[in-house]
Length: 550
Image 1 (cartoon, helix red, strand yellow):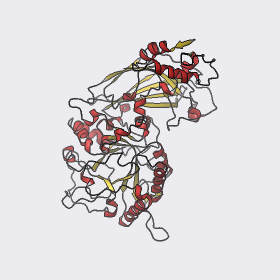
Image 2 (cartoon, rainbow, N blue to C red):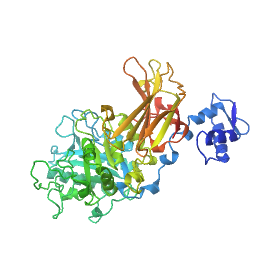
Image 3 (cartoon, helix red, strand yellow):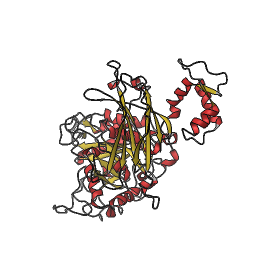
């Protein structure tokens, strides 16, 4: 059985794959490439290498990289898109980067910083505290989760790790160090010295004029390390402006100007100028977006997970106001304190209001972290993804929800499904596929369940039947599409997960997440990995074949 170039072009590429721009010359180049593949299970290629392909080579194409579900233009690094202020981008961000496990008793490790950076993270968190003095009497700042039993690592070891990564990839886009600074003055002096002496020319030191202008672009800061922390207020600043050296990962005492019972007293300035002068991004407390829009672009907010919904619940006007604020300023969001097991929150809601630094626990490989990996696979995996125009509020009358869509998905088959944990031994698996669409709602859902995590996002599932004893090449071949109503395609994510049906707990085998806006129509292949992002070894040939339409 063979297929000719004309049949492949007209009946498959144009009608089925909806690739109307494909020309016969493109098919000829593709056929030559496929016929040159050394496929031991295929027959001899035709004498006319550009004229036809056999069934085996067609199957190779279907499951191959050239037929990926991802829009290839969205995967490529678009350097020209990185010349706008940093506030225009979603930035791959980690929470409490040093932790290997839970928030109360787990070990802290420098290796977690290298692992996060290699995974594409561009904003690392360091909770800095006073340590001991060394043998020479020099203060040694440490990093750990304060007031817990987590272990301590030195501040200097982390900075050396960051320096090593930057040296190995000198063209990387800016690395932001988010300093949660609880140190006394002597230890702050050492922090500043370590930053300057270890990083040298890699450290971006802003001048005073820069602080009142638009934020620099990722391209302008390429190869640089940027500090996020606190700067002392200027003499004419309001007394409740951020004077504390800590960036305050806590639920702030005021929301939209509503104060608590504590008296509004000036705080003693704790951050030293020698450290503050290295800081580009200055954390300030949130009161209302009307006030926040007036602060310099280099000043920003940190908002806890539970406070995100409180702000949105308080007034519907806060949704466009938050997006407007995030055009010129940064917002960092982080998991709620009750997540002591280091679980993650759904990042799509924060992305939808334009928050750039949506911090997740990288050590926890759940579906929310999987969505983060999928989001930042865009733009060459550089860690900076340009926010859509309707998230930026740039298109008059163009709401985030104006271009809703019906997404249709049909699972066909797969190849090379791994055993649980990537093991090479064990019983034959019984795989099934779970498809989940994570979306943001135009209006608060009064009937939200605990599974939805909050009132502003939705999660819709579809599962295939399981296939008995076949992980090598399972075929589901669903006869009809599952249809999903997607309200916010520019931020929605679709997660494909393969699980092993069992009498008790169904093991997770492999998965991948794709932004809905990056999908291609047609019968497409999707490369799966484990939940750590590993796609080699037992995951070398793990693919799903899925038909997509919208």
